[in-house]
Length: 452
Image (cartoon, rainbow, N blue to C red; front, side, top):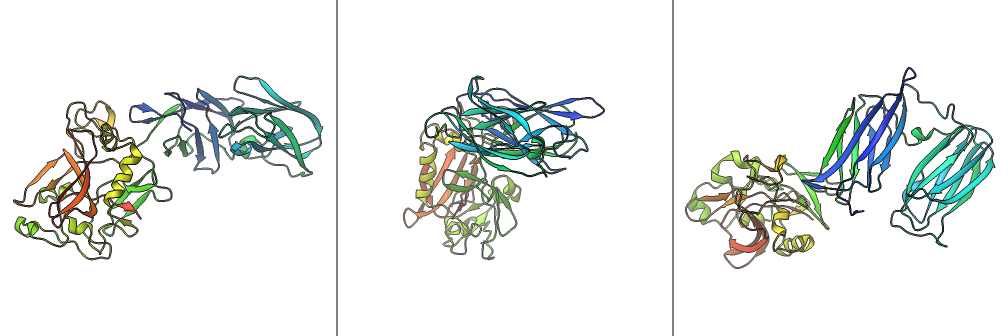
């Protein structure tokens, strides 16, 4: 799906028939992964007020599509003598089907052209009233414009050959495959697309790109520009997960792994057993069982960076992660870094949240407010995969000291390194690597949960 272009603007025009006037509304769409433009492949528009939806497909150039929206009029074909359905499936592989409804007997011409306007195939015939079904077989092109022309009406739909496949024979072909004598008709093109619009209706726009999908909901009443900002692709069917304390976390799909997008902050194991909050440094240092603290023993850090847990809490059989989730094994952290390209420069910055002091990305990334990273030279988070790693600091074992919040973020693995040590992985403000290391089991570090 990825294209070699930096900017794609997707614009559609809603034309409203009212009192013989045709005012227009222009809605413009772009997508970004922070400052990097992301090509839009398609966008689904759902009318949450009246119901119905339509999908617009964009080549890598400016796309303008006109929609006629009849206020208070939800009739069928009306004055038009025929109506054309959107092809199905779309995108398609090698072949797809289009339906044509004729209100009465009529001579029609069907032409298919490519992006340059070259005519690839033509079909013409006198067809009786009712429903007619056609199969289109693709050539080598990716985009096709299927146009039906009659006495009073001309309608064009756009078709996408998803993977650039060529049908058997290598040439475009239109075949009339079926006819139904159906006097009930079917709805016009705008209603086949199931899209009816009045200014002020609540619309949901879902953009599809090579990164994933993202949605915006708004009620436009005039010209509007929307920017889809990607911060990761939620796990399919699991956009959020809630722990036993009622804390909710967004999820992010990275390769085959489904991760929580924030640090764990539960104070209760998943079976309902409380996790001890050990403030005293001596008690903490001598533990051989699970415990947690807030940074500086201040619950005000909870929602910003989550809790700090000793390793015993991370591997407790009562389950520190929500049911169906677990603390990653060391090799699962390796799977993550292997997927993003490795652990060396610049892959650490790709896992960091972009929120940072003096971030060159600007916008919401440029901030002094926690949660965020301290600035250091040319190292800054870009959060390319939506992991959104934050530097929660850690608790050392000897003197109740908490250090390096805003500067390091490390997460326990479930694997021990020795009788006193365990593996963990993390990020540092002054390096752009992913550090795989080990620390004493009694130190306090963050936890990120991974779906089973």
